[in-house]
Image 1 (cartoon, one colour):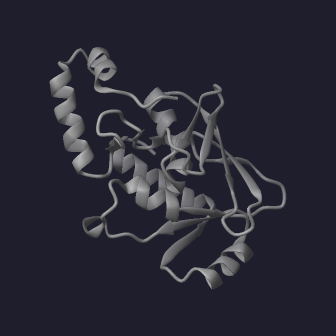
Image 2 (spheres, one colour):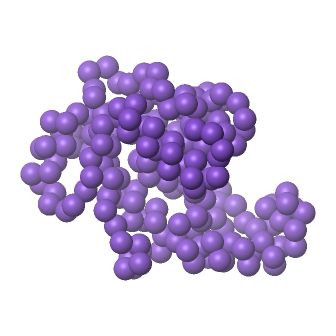
Image 3 (cartoon, helix red, strand yellow):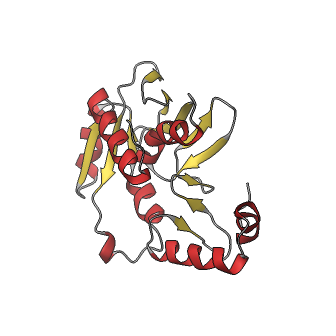
Length: 193
Protein backbone atom coordinates (compact mmCIF):
# COMPACT_ATOMS: atom_id res chain seq x y z
CA UNK A 1 0.00 0.00 0.00
CA UNK A 2 1.14 3.51 -0.78
CA UNK A 3 0.90 6.40 1.70
CA UNK A 4 -1.96 8.77 0.88
CA UNK A 5 -1.62 12.42 -0.18
CA UNK A 6 -3.94 15.33 0.55
CA UNK A 7 -5.55 15.33 -2.91
CA UNK A 8 -7.75 12.22 -2.52
CA UNK A 9 -8.79 13.38 0.96
CA UNK A 10 -9.74 16.81 -0.39
CA UNK A 11 -11.65 15.20 -3.26
CA UNK A 12 -13.54 12.84 -0.96
CA UNK A 13 -14.44 15.64 1.46
CA UNK A 14 -15.11 18.26 -1.23
CA UNK A 15 -12.63 20.65 0.40
CA UNK A 16 -9.81 22.70 -1.09
CA UNK A 17 -6.44 20.90 -0.91
CA UNK A 18 -4.79 23.78 0.93
CA UNK A 19 -7.45 23.61 3.67
CA UNK A 20 -6.94 19.83 4.02
CA UNK A 21 -3.18 20.37 4.16
CA UNK A 22 -3.61 22.96 6.93
CA UNK A 23 -5.69 20.49 8.99
CA UNK A 24 -3.17 17.69 8.40
CA UNK A 25 -0.30 19.97 9.43
CA UNK A 26 -2.10 20.81 12.70
CA UNK A 27 -2.86 17.15 13.42
CA UNK A 28 0.72 16.13 12.72
CA UNK A 29 2.09 18.77 15.11
CA UNK A 30 0.10 17.08 17.89
CA UNK A 31 2.12 13.88 17.22
CA UNK A 32 -0.92 11.76 17.98
CA UNK A 33 -3.21 11.49 14.97
CA UNK A 34 -1.18 11.34 11.75
CA UNK A 35 2.40 11.08 10.56
CA UNK A 36 4.09 11.77 7.22
CA UNK A 37 7.61 10.38 7.05
CA UNK A 38 8.36 12.37 3.89
CA UNK A 39 6.34 15.41 4.97
CA UNK A 40 3.80 14.88 2.16
CA UNK A 41 2.18 11.43 2.22
CA UNK A 42 0.41 10.03 5.28
CA UNK A 43 2.06 6.84 6.57
CA UNK A 44 -0.30 6.35 9.48
CA UNK A 45 -3.52 7.80 10.78
CA UNK A 46 -4.71 6.78 14.21
CA UNK A 47 -5.36 3.63 14.55
CA UNK A 48 -3.81 2.42 11.27
CA UNK A 49 -0.30 2.26 9.86
CA UNK A 50 1.15 1.36 6.48
CA UNK A 51 4.46 0.62 8.19
CA UNK A 52 5.13 -2.80 9.69
CA UNK A 53 4.61 -2.26 13.41
CA UNK A 54 4.46 -5.96 14.22
CA UNK A 55 0.67 -5.87 14.69
CA UNK A 56 -0.83 -7.11 11.40
CA UNK A 57 -4.59 -6.75 11.26
CA UNK A 58 -6.82 -8.83 8.99
CA UNK A 59 -10.51 -7.90 8.85
CA UNK A 60 -13.26 -10.44 8.27
CA UNK A 61 -13.73 -8.60 4.94
CA UNK A 62 -10.14 -9.46 3.95
CA UNK A 63 -8.75 -5.93 4.39
CA UNK A 64 -5.22 -5.91 5.84
CA UNK A 65 -3.08 -3.23 7.46
CA UNK A 66 -0.94 -2.72 10.54
CA UNK A 67 -2.24 -1.28 13.78
CA UNK A 68 -0.18 1.67 14.99
CA UNK A 69 0.64 -0.19 18.22
CA UNK A 70 -0.65 -2.89 20.56
CA UNK A 71 -3.60 -1.11 22.18
CA UNK A 72 -4.69 0.10 18.75
CA UNK A 73 -4.63 -3.51 17.56
CA UNK A 74 -6.98 -4.43 20.40
CA UNK A 75 -9.17 -1.36 19.81
CA UNK A 76 -9.49 -1.66 16.03
CA UNK A 77 -12.45 -4.09 15.92
CA UNK A 78 -14.42 -1.93 18.38
CA UNK A 79 -13.68 1.34 16.56
CA UNK A 80 -14.36 -0.11 13.10
CA UNK A 81 -17.61 -1.64 14.29
CA UNK A 82 -18.82 1.66 15.72
CA UNK A 83 -17.72 3.76 12.75
CA UNK A 84 -19.23 1.35 10.22
CA UNK A 85 -22.29 0.61 12.40
CA UNK A 86 -21.97 -3.13 11.90
CA UNK A 87 -20.44 -6.22 13.43
CA UNK A 88 -16.85 -6.79 12.32
CA UNK A 89 -14.07 -9.07 13.43
CA UNK A 90 -10.30 -8.89 13.11
CA UNK A 91 -7.38 -11.21 13.59
CA UNK A 92 -4.24 -9.73 15.10
CA UNK A 93 -1.05 -11.45 13.98
CA UNK A 94 2.09 -10.73 15.96
CA UNK A 95 4.83 -12.58 17.79
CA UNK A 96 6.00 -12.93 21.36
CA UNK A 97 8.63 -10.29 22.14
CA UNK A 98 10.52 -12.76 24.29
CA UNK A 99 10.36 -16.12 22.49
CA UNK A 100 9.46 -15.06 18.93
CA UNK A 101 6.57 -17.55 18.85
CA UNK A 102 3.80 -16.45 16.47
CA UNK A 103 0.59 -15.24 18.10
CA UNK A 104 -2.90 -14.77 16.70
CA UNK A 105 -5.79 -13.17 18.52
CA UNK A 106 -9.27 -12.96 16.97
CA UNK A 107 -11.60 -10.26 18.31
CA UNK A 108 -15.09 -9.12 17.34
CA UNK A 109 -16.41 -5.55 17.45
CA UNK A 110 -17.47 -5.98 21.09
CA UNK A 111 -13.88 -7.05 21.90
CA UNK A 112 -14.88 -10.59 22.68
CA UNK A 113 -11.90 -12.86 22.13
CA UNK A 114 -12.99 -15.55 19.70
CA UNK A 115 -9.66 -17.31 19.35
CA UNK A 116 -6.04 -17.19 20.48
CA UNK A 117 -3.08 -19.28 19.44
CA UNK A 118 -3.39 -22.66 21.13
CA UNK A 119 -1.42 -22.85 24.38
CA UNK A 120 -0.90 -19.10 24.71
CA UNK A 121 -2.23 -16.71 27.34
CA UNK A 122 -1.26 -13.41 25.68
CA UNK A 123 -0.21 -10.32 27.59
CA UNK A 124 0.37 -6.84 26.19
CA UNK A 125 3.10 -4.46 27.28
CA UNK A 126 2.13 -0.80 27.39
CA UNK A 127 4.99 1.69 27.38
CA UNK A 128 5.12 4.59 29.81
CA UNK A 129 5.98 7.69 27.79
CA UNK A 130 5.93 11.43 28.41
CA UNK A 131 4.82 12.84 25.07
CA UNK A 132 5.85 16.40 25.89
CA UNK A 133 9.49 15.36 26.23
CA UNK A 134 9.83 13.09 23.22
CA UNK A 135 12.18 13.78 20.34
CA UNK A 136 10.48 11.15 18.16
CA UNK A 137 8.52 12.49 15.16
CA UNK A 138 5.29 10.67 16.14
CA UNK A 139 3.73 8.51 18.80
CA UNK A 140 3.94 5.52 16.48
CA UNK A 141 7.73 5.79 16.59
CA UNK A 142 7.54 5.77 20.37
CA UNK A 143 4.80 3.24 20.99
CA UNK A 144 5.15 0.54 18.34
CA UNK A 145 8.74 -0.22 19.31
CA UNK A 146 7.84 -0.45 22.99
CA UNK A 147 4.36 -1.94 22.71
CA UNK A 148 5.02 -5.65 22.94
CA UNK A 149 2.93 -8.80 22.92
CA UNK A 150 3.90 -11.82 24.97
CA UNK A 151 2.90 -15.49 24.74
CA UNK A 152 2.39 -15.74 28.51
CA UNK A 153 3.17 -14.20 31.87
CA UNK A 154 6.27 -16.42 32.05
CA UNK A 155 7.58 -14.74 28.89
CA UNK A 156 6.94 -11.33 30.51
CA UNK A 157 9.01 -12.35 33.55
CA UNK A 158 11.87 -13.59 31.36
CA UNK A 159 11.79 -10.44 29.24
CA UNK A 160 11.80 -8.15 32.30
CA UNK A 161 15.09 -9.74 33.41
CA UNK A 162 16.66 -8.40 30.18
CA UNK A 163 14.79 -5.07 29.87
CA UNK A 164 14.75 -2.70 32.82
CA UNK A 165 12.61 0.11 31.46
CA UNK A 166 9.26 0.85 33.08
CA UNK A 167 6.24 -0.67 31.38
CA UNK A 168 2.74 -1.76 32.28
CA UNK A 169 1.70 -5.30 31.40
CA UNK A 170 -1.92 -6.32 30.97
CA UNK A 171 -3.59 -9.62 30.29
CA UNK A 172 -6.43 -9.79 27.80
CA UNK A 173 -9.20 -10.22 30.35
CA UNK A 174 -12.72 -8.91 29.77
CA UNK A 175 -12.00 -6.20 32.34
CA UNK A 176 -8.85 -5.02 30.54
CA UNK A 177 -10.63 -5.03 27.18
CA UNK A 178 -13.56 -3.09 28.70
CA UNK A 179 -11.00 -0.40 29.60
CA UNK A 180 -9.83 -0.32 25.98
CA UNK A 181 -13.46 0.16 24.87
CA UNK A 182 -14.03 3.01 27.35
CA UNK A 183 -10.84 4.76 26.24
CA UNK A 184 -11.74 4.54 22.54
CA UNK A 185 -15.36 5.59 23.18
CA UNK A 186 -14.01 8.70 24.88
CA UNK A 187 -11.51 9.49 22.11
CA UNK A 188 -14.05 9.03 19.31
CA UNK A 189 -17.11 10.32 21.18
CA UNK A 190 -19.13 7.11 20.86
CA UNK A 191 -22.33 7.28 22.91
CA UNK A 192 -22.53 3.64 23.92
CA UNK A 193 -19.88 1.11 24.72
